[in-house]
Amino acid sequence: MGIAPELFDAIDATLATAAADPAAVAALRKIAPGVHAIRCDKTDIQDETPYRSYENCDLFLIDGRDHCVKITSDPTVATGLVVAPKR
Image (tube, rainbow, N blue to C red; front, side, top):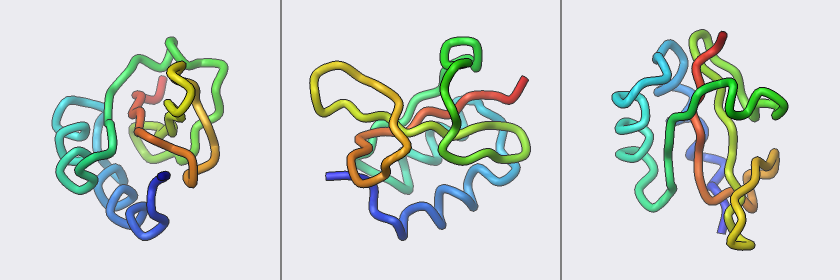
């Protein structure tokens, strides 16, 4: 379980200048099959700290192991990715 460390090179390259839009989410799903990827508004997770921050968006990791999704900073337990626009 978790997101492999080497996958973050491709994630970084994909999100480096991307907008937090459906195209970015689709690209993440393509490079990381089996990893959930969604977009959400920054206000929905404004109290959370991004795992990584890029020019136009922030990346958060999801931990969905306990049937209740929560944001995590630990890629070894992450089950998905959230992309949010910077505001």
